[in-house]
Amino acid sequence: MTQSSNSLAALTGPLVLAGAGKMGGAMLTGWLAQGLDPKKVIVVDPFLSGDIRTLEPKGVRLNPPLPEPASTLVVALKPQTFHEAGTALKDYASSQTLVVSIMAGVTVASLQDVVGGAVVRAMPNTPAAISRGITVAVPANGVTADQRATADALLRAIGGVEWVDDEALMDAVTAVSGSGPAYVFLLAEEMAKAGVAAGLPQHLATRLARETVSGSGELLRQSDLDSAVLRQNVTSPNGTTAAALGVLMGERGFSELLTKAIAAATARSKELAK
Image (cartoon, rainbow, N blue to C red):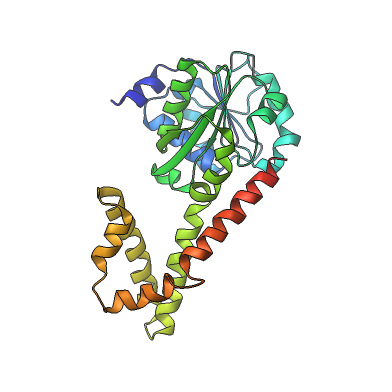
C-alpha cells in the first residue's frame, strides 16, 4: 500500500464531496480504490449519475440530511455555479475543516469568504479520469502540515501533484495543464483531418493520429530525455519530418500559436477570478 493510500485509509470522516460530475466522480473512484472507507464519504449533488448511485449500497451517503461539519470538504462544482450554490456549503465547514477546491478561477480568498475553513486551491486535469492527471495545488496561510498531507493524498488518487506557494501562478497552470488536454485532443483531430486531405481513408487517418499522439505521450512519460531531444531523435536532416517541422516551427507556426493560446487561457482564468 502506498503512502497516499495509507493516508486515505486513516482519514477521519466525514469527507464531503460537493459535486460528483466527471472530475469529482473520478476523484471519488480513486479514493475508494486506494482504501478510503465508503462509510466516511458523503456526496452532495442534486444530479447524481447512475455510477455514483451504485456506491450507495457500499456505504457512501448520497445527499443525506445535513450532518455535523466535515473534517474534509472537496468542492468540485462548476465555477459559474459556485457563488450561488457555494453558500450552502458553509454549513459543512468549521474553522478546522480542510476545504479542497478544484474549481478553475475560484480564488483562495473567495473560498474563504463563501465557505470558510482551511483552504487548498487545486487545478487537476481530465486525465484524472484514468488516474493519469496532473494537479497543481496551493495552500492558504494557516493550512497545517497534516491538512496539506491529507489534501496531497486526496489529489494523488487521480495522478501526480505539484505544490506552489504563489497563487498567482494558478492562472498559467490552468492554461497549460488544466486546459492542455484539449490542445492535445485538437492535435489528434487535426492530424486525422490532414491525413484525409493527403489521401488516407478516414478510419485509418483517425487510428494513426490517435495512436501516434497517445503512444508519443507514453514515450514522453517514460523517457528521461527532454522533449526537444525526443523530437530531434525523430528528425532526420532533410527528411520528411524536417519538412513538416519547417512549417510547424516557422513564422506564425506552432510555437507562436501555442504561446498566444496559453496567454489567452491565462487571461481568461484571471477574468473568472474577478
